[in-house]
Figure 1 (cartoon, rainbow, N blue to C red):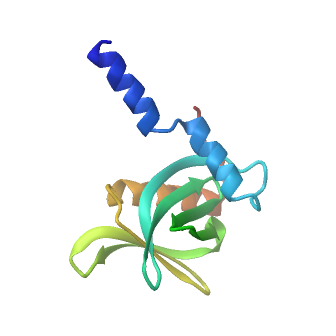
Figure 2 (tube, rainbow, N blue to C red):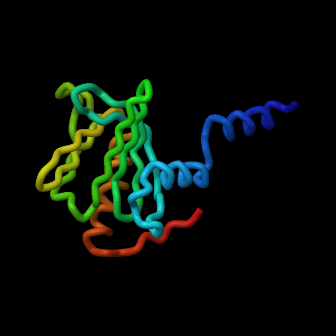
Length: 140
């Protein structure tokens, strides 16, 4: 088997397709409207009493987070229109790899992003689009 084929097979196994990610998104966040479309997802962690490693799912109208650590599941959904501020933050006042999202009643601190600035830009654009009620032109 050629190295290219092996690489492609590994890539498919290690990197789920958009269709698979979208199915995961639908199964995890059943309370969201059927019309809600997953835009992108990222590996990150949610700071609570402990750091919960998981995935951040961004859709047209929601920021969602899911973590499953030793069968302790954490699900979080935040409607983009409910967000009043979104800021780039630092972990331990030093490492620029976090984003804080605030609503009137809650603060959510997401960290451990591989590319925080790129993630922030996507989150910020989706938030602004939701506030302006624009549809995202997104194809897969």
